[in-house]
Length: 187
Image (cartoon, rainbow, N blue to C red; front, side, top):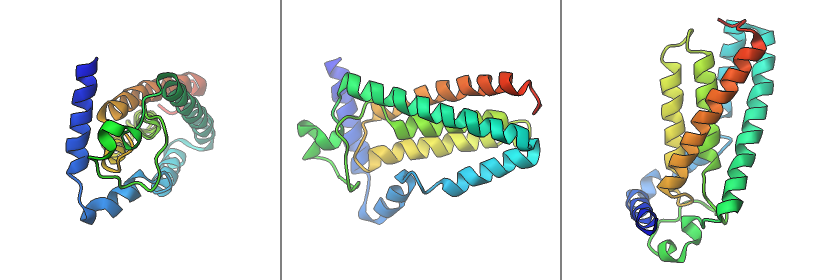
């Protein structure tokens, strides 16, 4: 396990070290949770326009429950494992680029990664019959958001990989819940 943590530290320092002042603003924008509110609004509009109010309201309820549960499970892991974020880890913090203006205490696993991937999978699966490219696009968007957490210095690669994996499982699970609840109205 110590070797895996060492590799994780080394990979973090490599990826975080690729950054430059010219790109910092971009990645800070990507990592800001309010940046993608227009994307969420567009996705809700697409759901409404393709499936109607009934499905949209159910999607909002299921998505809210999904984000709440995904976020809380993430917090359980953070406070259960108590793995320091890179910006708090004495072995790493002096060698890294700290781009974010704040840094929490624990980082395993990334809530940004899990929540964006859960959203990507839920909405991508829901709209896949209408927009074949959407699931792939949303997954790539989620990976970009997850990488931003490494870039700005607040998560290790394992934190974001586990967050992405948990988010994918969560998104798929809540898609199945939505599928049962809607009685397959949207197909």
